[in-house]
Image (cartoon, rainbow, N blue to C red; front, side, top):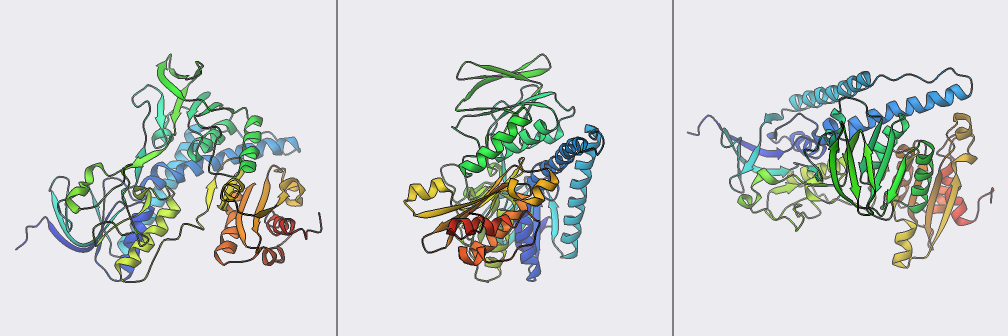
Length: 457
């Protein structure tokens, strides 16, 4: 007879974020007995400490910025914001998400186990040092990632996870890191009248994005007083007089009420004892997986940030579905070619496929079509006229990339994603009727411009 603390299950998922939740739900929908082990709340980093609180903040920033425009056209004074109420709204959004996930798990018969998991073999796991033990047929590792710490423990210093717990709104902030997280936080704080200095060691911010899209964002940052320093590496940081100060390798010292380090993330695998399960990692500590999200040990899968493939919540979600389908015997493979990049700056950025820089490096012949947001009636009417829509077209009229810097770009880009995934040619996209006046009508106009058939050329 097995001891009371010993359980059997078909599928055990380590981590209840987007990837782990999707894997568990896919397995449970196929009738498999499924459990999720996580030391924290449902939703993982995305819901509790990442995407969702960030976009909640940015939604408030957009409202505040729009109220300033409203005043300019006679609509009354700008709204006054209360940071305590903003944080309460943020907490309410998170609580609602947690409640929704917990409800779905219960309805699908998925057991949620709060605790820290570690492998004891390739088919057994212990929780909290042996308080519980699980025998499994399949496992999915979805423990995510954690911020790379530069200056942990320094007073008034935050990372990309705990910045959302900052108690008092700063009048100035220094942000280290010009990736998506860093620039989104610069957009929020800058838009809310906080003095922002963004420091990036590389030659430019958002290095994975198209150069023209980056230029639009940097131009708009200047309007909100955000200072960007690129090609500069931070050497040290200290807490100072209720604030902080950082020294760069060029000898400059930048001070602020707060410091945010957003230089990247690393796989969160430390407590798992992957060696006990025979699961291999690469030199950076990310778990090696195949196209079906299988690891080096049969029956064990890994999804999300822990694989290092694409540190995005929505990628993790689809990887979880692929892993769940693989477990249930369905043919499944992850295709990263049409995963969009979305950045919630002002204006937003959305992109899919290759950039011009990448195509030039590969020696690929292409044509670039552009349409400017300021030419759209919808943009002029709403007062948000910054941006550009670009479609890159190959010699065979295939769509090689779509890049958008515009209001609502994080929504608009999915037109490009769907078109590319469906294999649509540029002339088909150019010949598709879009509604007017809209922002999305710029997409076929940009495709037509690439083909030289635009009526506006």
